[in-house]
Every structure is written in structure tokens, then in C-alpha cells.
Image 1 (tube, rainbow, N blue to C red):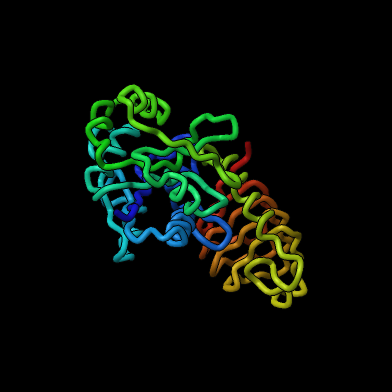
Image 2 (cartoon, one colour):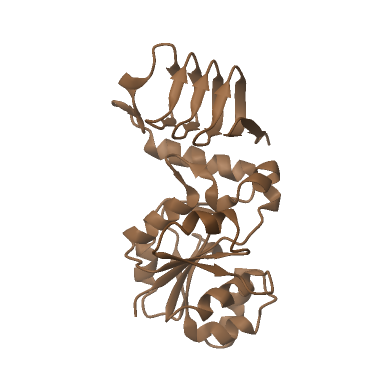
Length: 286
């Protein structure tokens, strides 16, 4: 049968500080899109037709965000609030094979290579070069639901894999292609943004989003940077490593190592290692 997918998005982001209290990790803004939209794009490119998002509360911001798409189901995690509790909830609603993606991971490569390598295996895990299991992307058959339910208290993927192996379940391992960032801290978030900007840097006519010819003469941009075509800039110095979202307003500002959310306003300030949400600057200083 076809592979289905679930994005786990029930975490609270407690190690993200003020940013985590204000913004769920799947809604972290990356160059040109939110993290969850990047995942959905990658799933679509891998040929996944059915995707669910698992949340802790159906009223959560993530649930409200994805409800606008008729092709995405919203699942509420059952107790206990552990990793295996989340996996069991998702597997119970799957028809056969389920690709599980953690909603706080950024992958440079789409997931097609992993799905192809996992074909025919009841369980498959992503690994680093030395063979250790990477949380964030794995595939499980619904036939393993009882095994997952037997270890609901488990909160680590390595524990689950060892239990499956002890029950003689064939477990495939697939080496990671490209890079992956697990966003557990503000530093991890900035690392992911840096990697994406380095990959998307364009040395011709665009700052990834906005044509160079559209930059006002009063504003200087230092690459790498991603600026939405719908942003408004005036008398500012932007970059390096700055992301500016749609409808953002930047005036009389000096920005570096910063993410400006769509619709936000930054005026009359120097700002480094920050995220701007609305009119509020949230420090990401390490």
C-alpha cells in the first residue's frame, strides 16, 4: 500500500525560551516559508498523498494553521505524552506504512530516497554516518502497533528500535543524505537558517526573494539574505544572515543574524541575534 505520513507537532518547545513560549516550532519561519510548510512540500515531492499532523491540543496554533488545508488531517495525541505515545496515536490511524517526521527537524533533502530505501521493511530508521539512529525521520508498519503500545513510556527512538530488534522485527537503516538540524534551542534555529541561506544564496539578480533592482538606494543588503518581494525597506542595513518575511516593514534599522516574521515591523534599532514578531524583538543570543 502507499506510504502515509505524520508530522509530530505536540511538543512544547520548552528549551526555546521566550521564542518557544510564543511560537510553536513547526511555525518557525525559514527563508520564504514556515517549517511545517517546508515539510509538507518535501512530502509532496516524495509522492506522499496523505498526511496528518499530530498535536497536543486541537485548538493549538499548529492545528489552526493546517486546518485550512483539506488534505491534512489533525490528530490529537493520546496519553502518555511520550514519543511512543505519539507514535502509537499516529499508527492507530494509519492504513499500513507510516512515515514519521518530527515537527522540529529541518532536512536539506526531500524524503523520497529514504522511502525507497525502506521499501519492504516493517521498520526503517535514519542513521548518521557512524550508524547511530537519528530521531526525526523513520518509517513503521501498522503491524508494529502492539509493540509500540507495549513501550508507551519510552521517550527515545533508540529504545523503540531495541525493543523491535528483540522481537525479531527486521529494521532497515538508511544513511542520512545532505544535512539535518534538530531544533532544540535558539542556536539550532539560527543554524538551520544559516544553512538554508548559504544554500539559497544567489549571486545574480535576486536576494533569493526580492530582485536587487527593487532594493531602495537608501538600503544596503549584505549576503546571504532572503527578502520577501512584499517587504518594505527604507534607510536600513540588512545582513548578513537575515530573513525578511512578506509584508514586513524595515525602516532605519541595522539587522544581522535575524529573522523578521511576516507582517512584522522593525524601526529605528540595531538588532542582532533576534526574531521580530509583530513589533516585538525576541533575543536569540546564546
